[in-house]
Length: 438
Image (tube, rainbow, N blue to C red; front, side, top):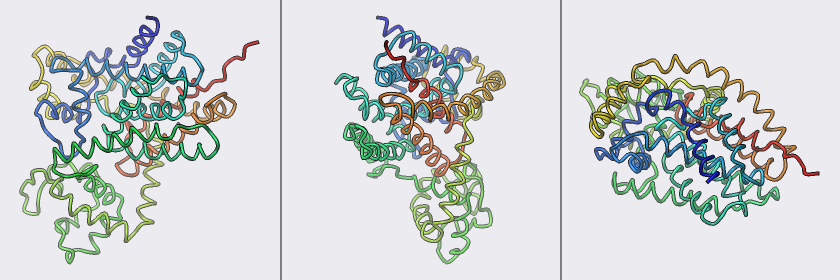
């Protein structure tokens, strides 16, 4: 009873921005994930995973269901982590830890947001628990973690390379003679890969992890320069569709992908290209491959620069406004939910455009906490007991890997960093040396 009350209290603390907003936090892409089951619709740019997760908890009744579920999942995961790291989980200690995460870090701005970003820290913590939890976890808890981590990996394409990288880190720690259950960590990765292959085969007719991922890679490489240089050097002889637009490149990756007048979405005659990203994918794969062959060092330099930019970008703000709500989000809520739910969405601070100004004062404090936590985590990891050193190294690798994958392969955005950097101060507390009994 006390455990359930503590986990529930922690969950409510971790989603407090939703209560302040008067509605779960949303992003322009949230509408797409809702459309996956409300349509239903297979989106070319998103795995068919997070949308069904949302539907499992809203059932066209209310989006409060999914946000409370996210809070409970994250709170319970912190409870299990406390047990593994400190030998026991105590209700008051757990509530204090969740309160710290809620008030001093950006954690609640991912937990209260209906986006698969919330699964990034879940994948990191879940993989660590599977690898290092050992006898501190019951068989049921290990099975639950395998299913949860598999869901988290499949929910966002960036989480698959992150999980694979963390498995490599665990292997290195095992070679360093740290006890690691490597097979337990690999199992959810295998399940996630199978889920992605199956859903893409059914929805897109292609047995692939990311049927159109080459378009996103091309968007990044053309903005950074190497792909634009290849296009200008090889065109018009290459005969690529994009040869007609070399004078417009490079352009910002987001504009390349989504702007109505970009080469992806409008052809050389000015005619709109419906699902232009899907149509460009085969050619994009060729251009990306040619770019990697022609200028590997240039690609590596660009990725390293974007990774460093991502490491320094982890504040809140880019998920607090109402950009594209009228076009991408409101129609989905109007389509799938009651008039009462639509009214609640319309009355929310975020929809009204006043949420960002109200919450941005937290940003400098969150940034300061992370900066102070970094050396503290290194110290407590070295001086701590049990799995403290492995946990600290695992978390630092996760932060670096997240920055490389999201910044280097997509684009540096604050929400990509904010969703995971909060683990540093929270983990420093979890690694804090326990008082020895006299």
